[in-house]
Length: 100
View 1 (cartoon, rainbow, N blue to C red):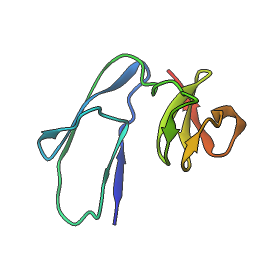
View 2 (tube, rainbow, N blue to C red):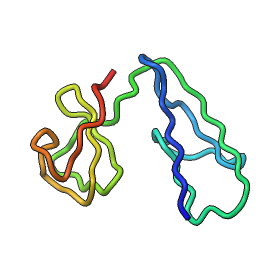
View 3 (tube, one colour):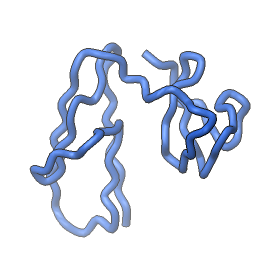
View 4 (cartoon, one colour):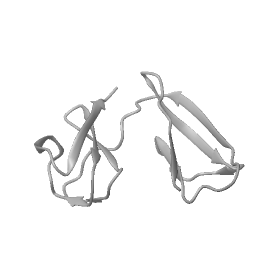
């Protein structure tokens, strides 16, 4: 089955890098999902000073379930595919946390 690890930085920090099984992941996010987990893996995460906020919501972008955005100082997560649905109006978005 799939297994997701969430990386939660302290206030004022953000994820700087993520290595999975020794391989650096391009564009590190605040989580990593192993698909069909059936073996032992290693994960190395480093943090750095800076905002832990995801990128700002863009009405023209396409988002899928699990994508996170910042809108009006809040972090929202898409529940499913979305485009041009303002995050603070509810579905398909859920409020996650204030953005630091």
